Length: 71
Image 1 (cartoon, rainbow, N blue to C red):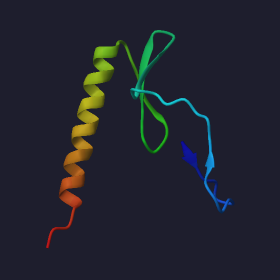
Image 2 (cartoon, rainbow, N blue to C red; image 1 turned 180 degrees about the vertical axis):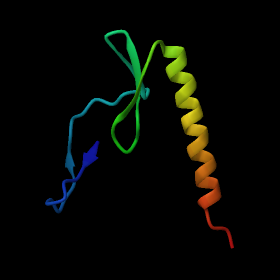
Image 3 (cartoon, rainbow, N blue to C red; image 1 turned 60 degrees about the horizontal axis):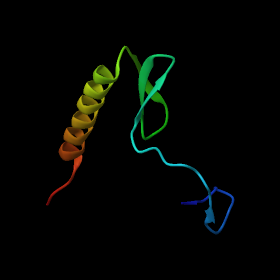
């Protein structure tokens, strides 16, 4: 993975493990990560978290469609 700091001119390798999913569990509570940073939750179980994540993604996809300019 390449990552660039603001004060660096060239890309450098960063050995950072990648998550395969946005959802995760901490002490029996479920959360999902937002792409811009931060988390949403807690949820009582994984199914509730996944349902809200799906709704969140649908909402943002609809917002993106409305804001796209097509001449």
